Length: 528
Ligand code: BG6
Image (tube, rainbow, N blue to C red):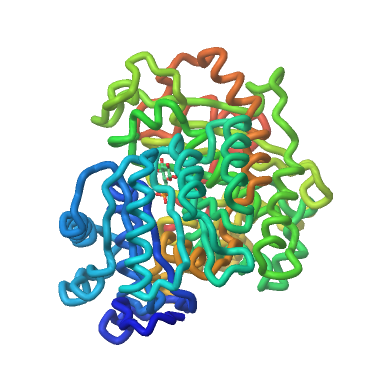
């Protein structure tokens, strides 16, 4: 709590903010929130709107301040003005209330300096001391790396040199580091980055953020699996035929061509978001909901994934790049993308999880840009019934059950079931049992960033990636990244038109196994 005796600027606004969201808990320790890269996109689009939302819900600690740090010259007043515009424009802000903004804004500060400039860190030190006195932030510091990854290592070194990385460990105050993705670009660079962070910060001070883990529906995977007795007995290779994880986006690369053309979909979506979903679907029950324990169980899954065989890659991995289609430009025509780029904007992988629970049960993962609809869907297809005793005719629809977990949008879960269709005769039709998040709980106001920022302030590491999981993810991708980098696609790029579900080879990947990709609208019993 604030121990300075100063009146904290940030105070609870629950009544006026009016949000009646999920049971988020206000951190009980004050802190200064330092953002490196404060003039960038992430700060304006995600971080400040999330902090403002938390403020409106009375969820910031009483002693709280933001110190932005970036090379773009700005005064405090200019930074505040720019952030006001971002918050007003943000679709993630519940409602922009000028009076609440006026109460929030005095906690925003800004330091203009390069990430390598000693004078910048001296100034940061002075500002933090001033902020501790003015806002009662209690000496606790949260350093948020919202910069290009090449600055992560140097910033951390400078923090140490200037005595700003101290705190935490047994001290009266703590220091935490939040690192945005991408965490490295391959195994070697991720290890090198981990080493440079570990020279200054202990693993339990490092919060590697993956915004998927902050999504309500992703967190619900654990609740759904482990708070319901009926799931566990069937959640294994005896009942599950296969699992599909789709993260489809309608967007192209927008203004991020420069970054994306170096990254591609495997680095951008698989190494983090898709592998995390895989781990949550496949993991064993943890003994407690606690950072190390949950993360141990997730790491076990990644350890059990059979490495892809470079000699047999075509059978297990498909890549694609969108060309022009449905009135949209092709990837190679996007700004900052090389006109002959071989970067993949779509990938599909078939993975086997070699353990007792999942023996011989494929996990198919796919993700792509410029798909026909935005949809993140986990589809668990169960096995066919062992024996059918009905006199079935061509009219009957006897399909295996599919449990479809809609991560976004239209968040919810549906189960397809065979049911007797009304009438004198015994015919079976497919129907769906549906659970909709918004129908059950109303709108949920917490965005992923709000949840995750609160967790950092509370010191809860459960929803953040640990260094071993990061390494394991890169190890799994290494054979595909290497093979794809060393030879262009046999199926020449571009190989799918914008606005379609990826290259035909992605369908063939499942068709070879007698299966087909699912979207929520292709599930049996789907009704518009
Ligand atoms: C980001 C990727 O991590 O996730 C983006 O860098 C992608 O390319 C985004 O668009 C998708 O997130 P969401 O929450 O919209 O599914």
